[in-house]
Length: 315
Image 1 (cartoon, rainbow, N blue to C red):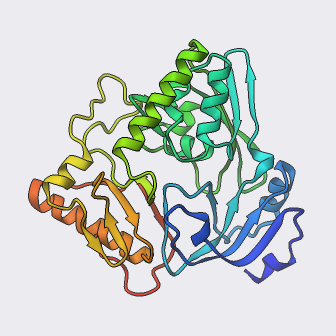
Image 2: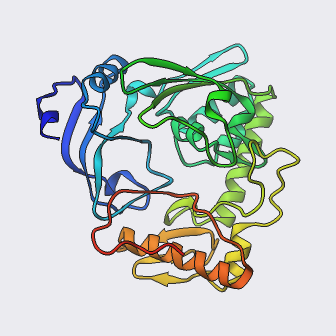
């Protein structure tokens, strides 16, 4: 890692950068380095010069992430304003990886294009592609055309849906690839109707989810529907919140972590949680659900980095 101090990118390269303030859950230790590239060329040059043995990890707005208390031995790459453009060309929407999902949904609706499912997803487009984000029966894969990425050699790569192999809440993005933009071809719609639908979705979300608490969205994937796009054959009759509730874990507490009393599939930081509190409570929930129903919940929140103390045992 000492060699990194010799690199002179035009963007900001910060050593030993705490990551807690870059995630919605506000926990986690430092990254060896945090890099915010000035533009695409700066990113390409940096990756080209980076030693092969140095790991890289892209981070968006940190809305679906637990960084463990021991931090992350990697260069964390966080894209800024130069990567948040939103362009409309006919029936295509191209958005930078740092563009917020909600902003993309609104701008598309202005143009009569239906990306309304993105409106209530608390993340950025890079994360939406990486996780095949979806809501209300629609998924990123449904309207995905292509994405642009930079690999470890600094090369620009065009990725198709076949390359990414979209599945329920996941894709096959190669290690070290940094998504920089994505293009979508959504269905058309009346702008007023689309904006009205999004307003209804926001009201429903605020009524049913702990939107004022520090959370990372849904903690666990729904136990049913592990397939590519969430269409008719991918029913989600069995909900994660229901099996958590049935296991008696609604409102469960561990240190400063709690399963939300309002929506038991939301893991929240009540104010002083550590990453170990949050991950430990999540594993406790997984064990209780398995013991009561035989269902093994899968994490939807990504957990990265090193433990500061003893590892949290998996259920």
